[in-house]
Image 1: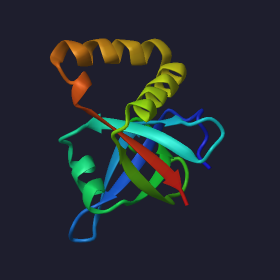
Image 2: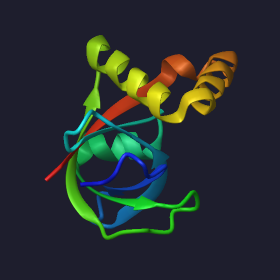
Image 3: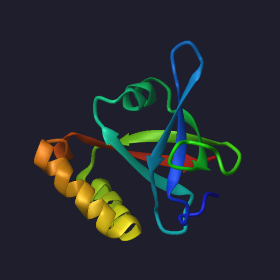
Image 4: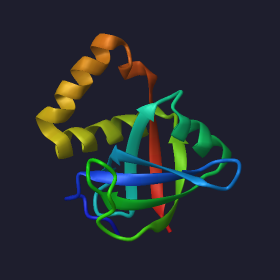
Length: 124
């Protein structure tokens, strides 16, 4: 289990050639469950890779992606239903507070807010 006290999660998504691409991302834990929310732009590479391969690896990391613990196997699902998206937004706002609200503001300002793709990660 990854603590919600961590700020960043390194998300490794699989390419067609079998190699992995590591990306540090914000994440929010869904209560006390081993379920985590992540978001990205809907046309980002990690989203395209998750469409092809739902198996991912995750590990807590620093802002620059340096791991602070070992990798864990997980599965990722792209979220489309509004109820889950609203739940994810709530968890992000609770965790990141003002930082998330400022990020949301600027994301709306440049038109990226509606282009966000939310991802649910289940640890195995």
